[in-house]
Image (cartoon, rainbow, N blue to C red; front, side, top):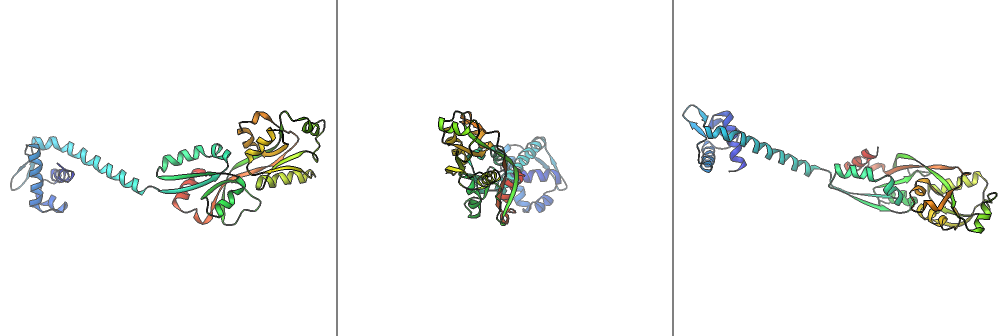
Length: 290
């Protein structure tokens, strides 16, 4: 018994005419008759009562009819599923972001994406968020989660995700030398600053210091915001970092936010090349972020 034989049988049940079924199924009447005879031999039962004018189902034929219909329906459903699977999006997308963003902004979106497009490989690269724009421009990443820079390259599209506040932080238990600069009044000019090496966070830090007429005593310039929190917790100086990094740091209980400072927030978003926004893989991921 095979699917083709059942399809011939099912059509013949409805047409009750060998010639008509043979024509519709693109088979000769004699070949159709052989297919039905083979089916009858396998079941050891006649399926049709034939005469020169009509074809009628036997009792065995009536019993086979719903079984054949169900088998063919399931077969067609399987074929459709396999066809849709072959037509599903395939390929690879590379996404660059900071370590913090990888668990603060990505899990929910990537989980949905994996459910919708299981055949698309997501390659995640983490590093200094200040490098994000260059990674996309140089095709080292398809997408990047990044803060909006002062001058976004015209070739890039930027999808707004939210604002990220920033804070000045000091050690919770500063060493004596540092403590003397923090109390009773903050001696901004003497304090050792730990700042982002570059990027939007550094731009906002510089803007805040300029507005307060502070010429910073820079102790260290760090690539990666997580390291700023670590160095401050060790008592190396005070730092400026995004709150999302501070709050997700495993050593957040060892630092203290200075309430006197209000640094402009970062504008966080997803960026990619404008020229690639209409590609199916890009559209799929952008739709979830939007």
